[in-house]
Length: 81
Image (tube, rainbow, N blue to C red; front, side, top):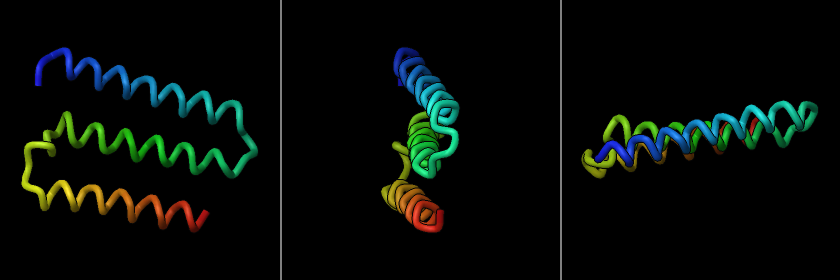
């Protein structure tokens, strides 16, 4: 991937981080905030793993296992909270 692509993904990661921080500051006593921040962190995890760890060039098994892991993590944590 070219440098512009890495910079674009990095900017998106920074924006998602700022959105999570802003959301945490504004909605302090809401249970909904936990769901939003966990979803933001799952998106960030997928972006980092697919672009910076180059999982998008890996075998389909690793792509599927990563996505399944994130889905299992999100569903178990969102239903428990």
